[in-house]
Length: 229
Image 1 (cartoon, rainbow, N blue to C red):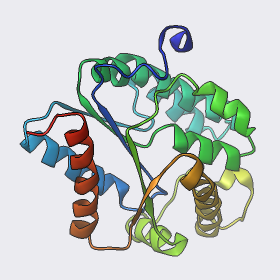
Image 2 (cartoon, helix red, strand yellow):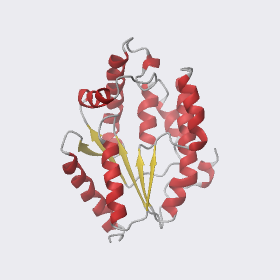
Image 3 (cartoon, one colour):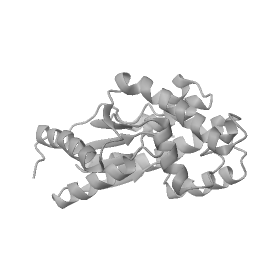
């Protein structure tokens, strides 16, 4: 990948705004960022939305590897890194340069949390993503493990192999494996709250209350960049 050679991490002149949401599955982060998306567009802002593992160039390869359940932690990590790099170079970075507000449902912090849980070295993972620009704000939707797990399981009786963390041999029961896996990911997120300057939002609050808090922070960023409309 040649991104690191031509993209400057701290080159933010004339940039738009990068807003990221993080949290485990079932934390409510996707609902919140979609609400932010609609709100910002209604205000007349140029907005681009991107989500984890969605590159058309990589998605099919990743899907095939997951179906065969043959991905090692390193291969799994590199596939997602390739997906991110493709979206970053094609969309995220160019649109930020063009002054867009880019909304990302998961960013490099998802990779860091999941890959470390799967046994990858932290420094190795950080180096893979060291070209990626830092977000203007990272909303971390914090919820108890059981709350998030129950939200997911109630609407999805059958979990996917890697989704449930079955590759880690945590439990023979997929639901129990999923609970343990999500708890381990939360532990990694908790370690990043201060070091990565997460803005923590209680994901158990009413959806409207969470959205009001997020909008307040976003308005402050818009005002600081003189982008209020």
